[in-house]
View 1: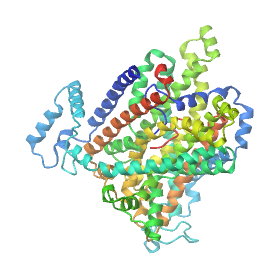
View 2 (view 1 turned 180 degrees about the vertical axis):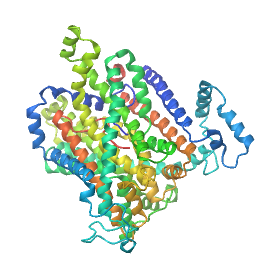
View 3 (view 1 turned 90 degrees about the vertical axis):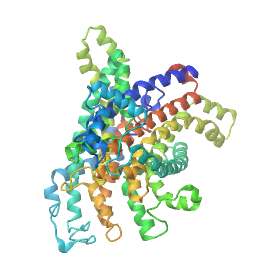
View 4 (view 1 turned 60 degrees about the horizontal axis):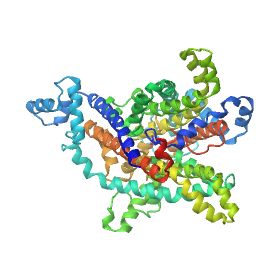
Length: 315
Length: 311
């Protein structure tokens, strides 16, 4: 396991480098003068000049890239144009609602997807299977922002059952948290639910054909025990991938969902940065998400190797 | 996009899945077509795509009014015989705007799909064919895939400014890595086939071998991917337009229409309802088509293919 870990960590280095190069290209794409942009609106000529030197924009390209790497390592993305504060600070302040929302959405998705996928596989090609997969198809096709608006309209406006447009942190109590979180979590989690349900179904079908399932039948185990104890456990392994890599989708989805439900998170920050053309801020968010994605990927692979020792040898 | 594919050479049911979509390629002729014809869902998907194309091409004839015709006296009218989908806050007919919106959707899909394949497939085939460059190319692809497509497109749009051309550039770049990854996996699988070995033994040059033996045989899985890429680009364009970073306001776009309807959600919910329906129906049709094609190519797989996800 340890040598696998070492090899896997080593293979992440070139990937991080590629991400950094893309980040650098995007940084160079900054509209207008990056130095003036990053120094802020009220910067004097000298301040802009100092920023230019700090960024290394007066240096050859490879020096600029080296400096960029250095700033990346320090998570230094300059000043937000619109907020007039360091980008990193602005991002950190907005993390809590987004993380709460992403976790709530993922849990909701799993709670629905695993039973759905399981039922669909066990009753494959029956009406139950068809209904479950139709639901998954709908989940893949309905845009999150539209679903969010439909939920706002029906539960917020028409029925008036749930509050819309506010965030309550978990420490304020579970019930207010849930009341404010349930609609956004449904909008954001629907796609994850659909992807996971499909994954659970297909890997269940695969596992149910294995020899050890037949052996279990031959031993005289009950169907329920076979499905839950032998099949589901193994079928859930590929689900780790969907969950781990769904993170990127959740953050992307949060951009629209937080906008609709007026949650003060990273997603809404991204949406308003986009409208204000706050390029340094958007760039920083993208780089942050890409880096987290690489870490999640690493964790997914390590979880896999932990769950399935055969993989440690193969790679 | 959240592909169900781990970034570097790791475990991977999806990659195996994509590759095994290759297997029945050989007997893909007549019985395949008959089976395609028999699958109601695939037909439904094809029908929806066909309807989109007809609406886009004949929008002028189909739409009852011009997309930008304003009638201040007819603002915010609920659906009626004269305006089946109602009117918006400027008195524009929503049905007509929705019909013209099909143009943008089709344009995006019809350009982004081939462009992303054109960018990704050569890289993937080279990586799969010449093992020496495989590692470097795939690490680059892995790095690109670390960026979620929607956020990546948002960043590019912020740099380049909102226009249809920029949406197309952003989406093609965002979806090229999945094409490269699938092309590589499929090339590897084809390379293991006896007929490639035979051709090589006969001294067929690399270029010809790739053109005549590899490319035709990785076409099938790429076709499935094309269908899903179309679906996610429709969704992502809608998201960009919804956020105000997609098509400029003068171009009728379903995403923009939903965004405009958001301000009138209490007084006139039909503003956001119908354009959203259009997006959902088209994306569902493309997903049905992709699923159907995949079942046709390999009935064993009914889970996910890399790239079937959205982000």
